[in-house]
Length: 411
Image (cartoon, rainbow, N blue to C red; front, side, top):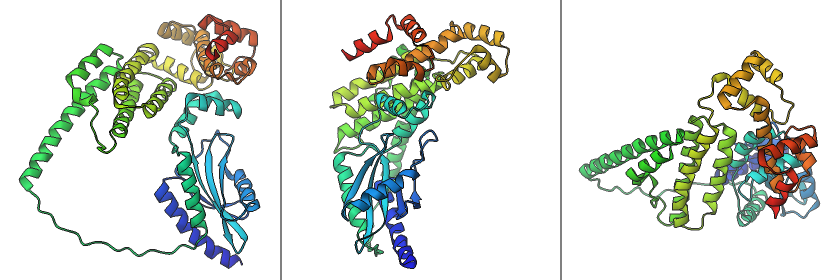
């Protein structure tokens, strides 16, 4: 029996490779004991998330309890979605193939906030989680059903190696002179586009909206929406805007914006681009995207901060949920606390405690807007150990108490 099972698994190794190649999804082959015997994985789970291994057995148990040729649509507490089907032979269960993780909707700021609060994850891991979730495939319900059908059928049959048949290659005549001319013309256009693209990104990195507008008008071809996909102009436009969003993100990072801010802006525009209903709406987004990145550079740039203050800001961003004091941060950076305090106030026009509190209030707003977590829990999540102090600090920066802010956002 052991030898027969090994032969069966070898066949399913090939099936897993085919599924991964076609769907671009992670695929795992699980034996009857819930152990992964093959993992074709491109999305490594962040360390902050629990490993999926303990869930393999539960998935197998569910499949084993149901009729053969059924598939299991599984969603875990982190919102990660999977499709799994059992491997059956003569009514005996031998294991399963699991495909995923994927998502059924774009991961919004609210989605990440819910994952963090539901699983009690540190808020300083938000950036890592955002990067992980945004890298996952978004699969519609119809597509996931089709994947389930495909998986069931492939799990039900032994793999058969195919035989390739090719057609004869037809030779076409090439006008070499015309080809040279086309290449030269394309080269000139591409060089011009890259020239203006660099100028545009440089202006965004400085937060110079007037210069951005001037360059955009001068190099109209940069922001014109061309039909790279003629049969789907809206998809073509969305693809170009996603590229623009990425370029602006890089320009903003060059301009001294902390990745935590860039992620929120980039994520918002990625969602707005995908949800845009028509070409005029997409064309209007071009200016909105560039202007907002410019505003962010003007408001949040650390470009003019000293190296010491930048390090302090980074430490604060990645430890917001923990107790933070001037002495602790100074010790971590191996500098004198008084010197750090003076330098921080000089660069940011804020005391370090005010800066920390402001960042915590900004993080708290994300959860208050959701309205599904108690104010007490939010206070502790963002690093406040005293609810009354949290309320005073929140009102100092927003002119509202946390409960008033929550009520206004949910009315």
